[in-house]
Length: 320
Image (cartoon, rainbow, N blue to C red; front, top):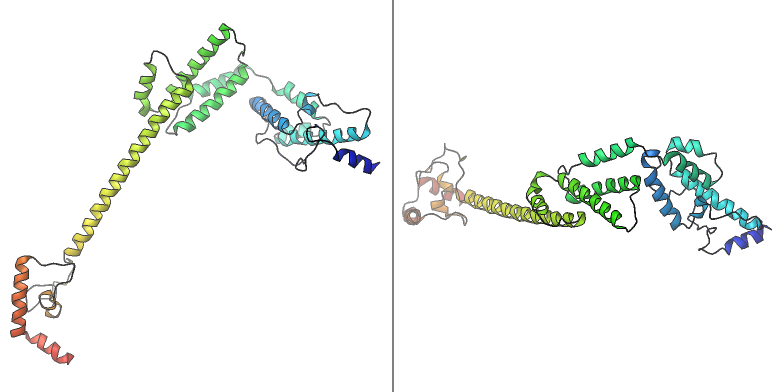
């Protein structure tokens, strides 16, 4: 009997709700959000439905997948799938809600009870969310982050209010009005730096949709970022040139920290001795003397050859 059960279970096709993949374990968390109660039930329920549809297990919460009463093997397989779906539901609940449902036996029962308990919307929930939307502003966020967060709150409010979806003219007018309100909320929350582009949008004879307004302002943001990067690059280039010039200028200018107690007996300048006098030993490559200094240096160098100073003669004698 056990072998027949395993054989039959292994023949269940992947399209069958009773099929369990090897990754469909009880420890799996199929949604990232945890149910806390009324404030996030709608978001949690939508996320859970999507995840269960992907797993082909939506029938275990809406009652469309019924336990077999004629085949014990399929009945046991249904029990197994029900337990897996039940643990997925419990894993996505906060600790307090988990403790209240951990003794449940049917996934559909937990789903139904959660909906009856937490799918309640009163005026305070709508008020708090609407107040949050109207008070929300960009506040130096990037335009995409600001729009994304605002769009999430809009969708939450639409889900709570259950806006009509019919195609009649009244429904269209109401949806147009709803989009107008959202456009105003989006424009009001923008930073003051976008005041000019906001004014241009509002002065149009036909106001754009929210997505079009976002695209217009997003291009403005990209343009500003591009200009800012160009100016920054120019500033860095000027700074580099300035530092480079300063570097070469420092190379050309003798150090002011030279020893003022030393005096050359040849050129009568302070800061060095005759042994280190450039006019005798020659100027380094990075230091070019002026034309007048060059003539004077050549003249003095010839004098050195004819009348070398005593200190130089002593040094030459010592070298020998």
